[in-house]
Length: 177
Length: 137
Image (cartoon, rainbow over all chains, first blue to last red; front, side, top):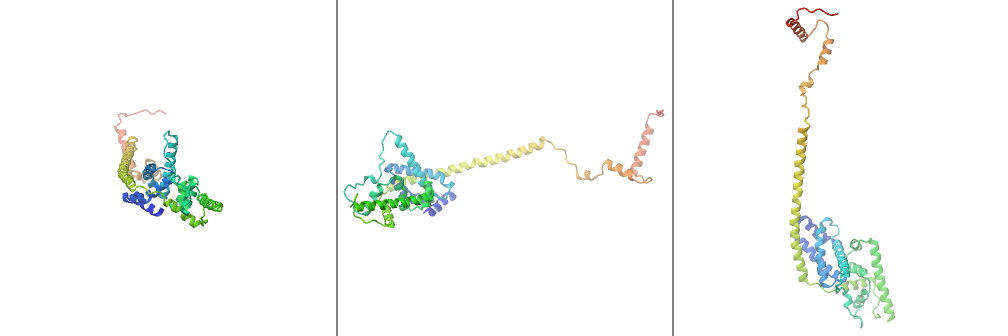
């Protein structure tokens, strides 16, 4: 994924190929929007942050083409943190509920995926982000380390710890039944 | 929350996690396209700006070159150097060298130029208005 993205952006930066940038946008926009939603943005805020992230990305991407997707996600995360702080300081309350929190599990779980969703909802935000990037966006540990500005070993350990925690809870609640 | 599902292995759990994220609501493609159009406009503007930003550097470069040349030219004129001695002049023997050669010459083999000098001196003595002058010892 990173290689393809890098090739497109090399074409954009070196040959001023706007079509290459548009291809990059189309390959990333959907996932980034979902990522922002998973981080707790409401629908409109996710679109705004997506646009702002790409605008900032355009300004800096040609300076360093080593890991463009990681750079895009880092920009988006920082913008989301800024917007969260701004909303917190603002007297006007916005709807920043997690997407998962709208799911009602008061009855019983339909299937394993439904239960997995319930377990993931109980995880802290940073752990949910890790799972999203590792198992859905398909980033490697190294790429996630680049996005979150953390050592690769830490990311590897954290991912393993989250999976272990989920399995443990799955086991405990299954035993309780 | 109790359940009856068997504990999944790591691979199956990873697939379940991916499935959960895949089930997130899809974005509105029309809105994403609008953002793309906005970005395209921005890209065109940005290219024009970057081209415009490059121009002053060339001007600065040309001006700097012009100033450097002018400074060098002015410096040459201001601190006027002595004219370099032509090579032919440098090869001619100096006066001292002439005298030394004269001293080394054997008696009786005087050069033509020395004779001329003596004749000139004698002519100057003859032309002098002083006919007789008492010598002071």
